[in-house]
Structure formats: C-alpha cells, structure tokens
Amino acid sequence: MAKQAGKGVQEFRPRVTKVLPMGANIVCADNSGAKILEIINVPRHHTRHRMYASASVGDFCNVVVKKGPAELRKQVYGAVIIRQKYAIRRLNGVRVCFEDNAAVLITPEGETKGTDIKGPVAAEATEKWPRVANLASMVV
Image (tube, rainbow, N blue to C red; front, side, top):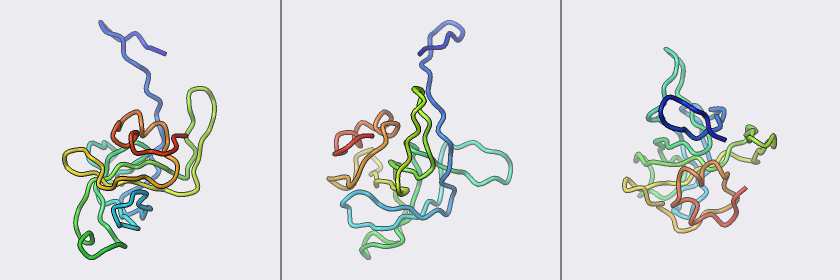
C-alpha cells in the first residue's frame, strides 16, 4: 500500500504498540552469553512530558546485562527487540504474539554480538534489521 504525500510516494509502515518501558527486564535471545537484559534508554523515541520511553518489536534500545558472565555485566550495549508478548496487529488482520519479550545484542557497527538467535523473530524486526534476518532460524 502506498500513500500519496506531497511530491513523492511514501510506503505505509504499520504502527506497533510500544509496550516495553524503560526498566523492563527482557530475555537475551542470542548466544552472546547474556541471559537477562534491562532496558535503560530508547533513543529516537518521542513521547509526552513525564512519560517513560517505551520500545516495541524492531526498535533499537540501550540495555544493561543483568544476568550473565562478569565481562558482560554492568556495561551498556545496544539491542534490538525481536519478540514481544503483546499482540502485533498486521495489515492483513492477523494478530501475532509471542510467549516472551526478547532482544539480541548489537555492536556499535550494527553487527549482532552473537552468532545464532534462539527462537522465532518477528517479521517487523527483520524488515528493519537485515543482519538480524540473516541469523534468524525462524521468522514469524
């Protein structure tokens, strides 16, 4: 679907509900060694005054490793959300939800820190992040 806006044609991007606020603990779905991540910041997120910034599937966020090896803990990393429990409504009317909230760690260059992703990955995340799509064993 395309919308006519001014001089050019823009593609229609579905809006996914932002359900993971700052402070949320999520599962790390790659094999980097980290187990539990905490969201500490969602860059490029605009919200109302005094409202927590939140993330959804496909969003980049800054995280801290809460459970994992000592060399990974207490450091800030970038991560991409690949699954969320709250239902995602797609343009064809289908609603997709997962059994956990999960993310994969990303290096500053945009590469994934691990070499494998455990579990399914939402299609919305693979559209925005081709490196995540390469490692995904199953895209839903």
